[in-house]
Length: 129
Image (cartoon, helix red, strand yellow):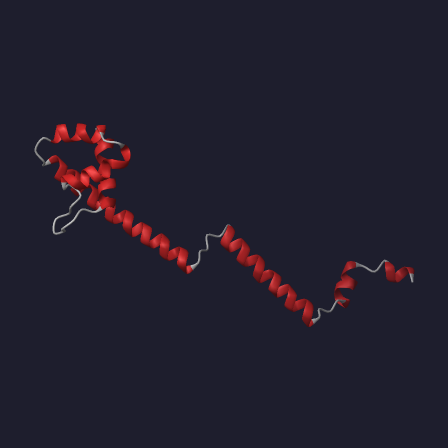
């Protein structure tokens, strides 16, 4: 009896048999742990998140290309120094609207200005000074 208690780890391992239930729960736990680690630290994202990230990147790319066109249209406008001073004096929440009214955020071939382009143009104009 004393001998049975002090059985080596190797002998206990050899005698161990996994039940189907224990194996199934082990696989479920491993799958859940893999998903938790993957989404929390592995950089995994859902399809909806990936789509939202892609749309934001596309919008950022478009604004990066259209912002300088707006700035160029500003630079070609007569009285640009006075208009830049007026822009600086305008309240921050109305600056994009001011740029839209001046027509600088209206891209060639478009009929109306884009508010996001106007916001990017404002950022570029006020950074360049």
